[in-house]
Image 1: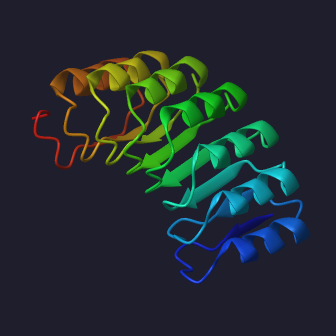
Image 2: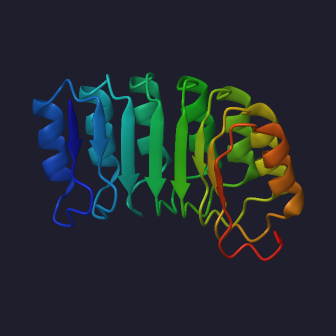
Length: 193
C-alpha cells in the first residue's frame, strides 16, 4: 500500500502520525516537498509501518534521529530519499546503510552535511545500488564518488549537480566502473568538463 503526499504543504506531523497509526501496512510513503515535518513524523512511520520499502522525506525539521529510527525499524527499505535535510549528517547515513543494505536508490538531495564519509558507507554496504542522487551535497568530493563507482557497478543514474568539488576523475571512474550507467547529471560542476 502506498501514499503520495508530495508537495502537500499543509501536511504536518499530526497528519503523518495519524496516517502511520491507521495504515500499518504501508510499503511506500512519499512526503517529498512537505517541509513542516519533524522527527516525530518519521518516528511514527518507523514504529508503525515496519514494512516500508520506499520512503521519501523532506525538510529542515528532520535530524539524524529520524533516519536512525527508520533504519532500525524498517530494515527492508530499498529506496530512501531525503531532501533539504540540513540537520542530517553522515552518522545517520552510516546507520541507514548498516541496517538497510539492500538499498537500490539513495536520494540525499541538498543534504549539505552529508559528505564523502556518508558515500563511503553507502559504497561499503549497498553493492546493488542503482540510483544515487547527490544533488547539492556540497561537501562531496571525488573520493566519495569514486568509492561509489568502484563498489556499486549496478549504478544506472547518478546526479552530482552542484557538487562543485567533483572533477573529471570521478566522472571517468563512474563511466568505466558502471557499465549500465545511463545518465550522469553534472549541472554547476565547474571542475567536471
